[in-house]
Amino acid sequence: MAEVIVVGAGPTGLLLAGDLAEAGVEVLVLERRDGRISNLSRAFGVHARSLEQLDARGLADRLVPTGAALDQVRLFGGVELDLGILPSRFPYLLITPQYNVEDLLRERALKAGAEIVHNAEVKGLDQDADGVTVTTADQTYRAAYVVGADGFHSSVRAAIGQPFPGRSVLKSIMLADVKVAEEPAELLTVNGVGDAFAFIAPFGDGYYRVFAWDRRRAVPDGEPLTLDEVRDVAKRALGTDFGMHDARWLSRFHSDERQVPEYRVGRVFLAGDAAHVHSPAGGQGMNTGLQDAANLSWKLAAVLRGAPDRLLDTYQAERHPVGRAVLRSSGGIIRAAMIKSWVGRLVRGAVARLALSVPAITRKATGQLSGVGYTYPRPAGAHELVGTRAADVEVGGRRLYEALRGQRFVLVGDADVTGWEDRVEVVPGNGGPLVLVRPDGYVGWAGTDPADLRRALAELVGSR
Image 1 (cartoon, rainbow, N blue to C red):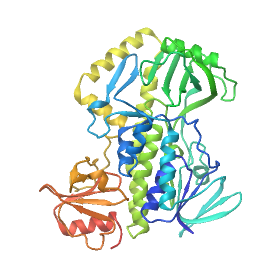
Image 2 (cartoon, rainbow, N blue to C red; image 1 turned 90 degrees about the vertical axis):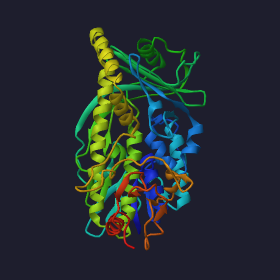
Image 3 (cartoon, helix red, strand yellow; image 1 turned 60 degrees about the vertical axis):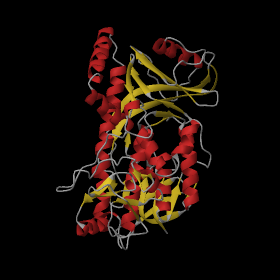
Image 4 (cartoon, one colour; image 1 turned 180 degrees about the vertical axis):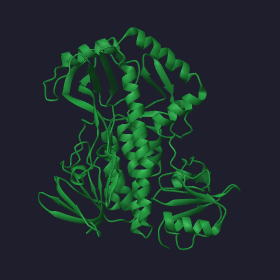
């Protein structure tokens, strides 16, 4: 019997499984697909906060060379955000296909001891006071907890009866992998003009991924798509089709904005696209799922090692508001990009430029888009640092995010952690309060009272 079953071997499920396995948790991943990693992934951008999470797992420096860094993100009509101001080791958006992220996360999960079963589509799920039973077409599995990271059409979400309220935002989005005769001048080219929206980014293997949408033509996802249709929309949105040719893949899909009310139902949790889906604007979908996984994994490990069950409720309290904020921001970007009238577009551009001329607004916008600006709710009476993202400062001759590797907590300051030494590393402080940094890089506790520290360790890390 596994301690945790993760359903879905996309980026969210793989990061979660790797974290659990590194923490010594017996984890089983059930994936309905075969073992091949598809190069037809939709996600293309890895934001700063996701890179920080990968850095805390020793993967960021391997991923960065697979892509190209973009420090200016164009939203619409020439309006840009400067990511270079981000207070991060990664002040940019990394343009690299999702399958590069999956490849690294899969390797790490397997190396840490996670088991991945392919061609295992979940058909049923039942939970009781002691655990959860998961049924596939071929076998029945049992675990203490189950996490559904199985995407938009989540079988786990359906099995626990969670609704998925929301609506379709864009219908008949066109996807194409093409070669081009004229290389785009910008790494990521995106624009919306009236009835047309288009995005083009490099795969890194000579092909480019194109997203295109035509307001005037909403057809079912299964409607045949031709390269000529993609070219036409790209010309209207971008002013050129870059000489697109030799399409190796053409498809349609629709984009929804949806979020489940509850990320936790008993012993079952939802993460990534199983919990929330957004418009593609801002490239936040995969990134939000990675942050879900980083938040939930250490909490499951802690509870399985003796921390109180109520710790798992903080997953909903911390991640649901972030998912809602991403829905609003990505939806706002796409709606602004698709304003139809020329007067509306002029006003949109003027308002956006005026807003982004205010440093505080720019910092908030870049922080939200990149993920580094989110904080979590602070319990009543807690130190003001609790719930904030920990900066990657030098601690004991190395960076904090290097010290976090191996799913460890880091206590900054001199204190006794006897009984928790296997899960908590103590590093020198700077004379301020003691600061306990969680494995996901957020401050879990801060203060000066040793007795309060021991209470926090029992609450957040588990039994001694």
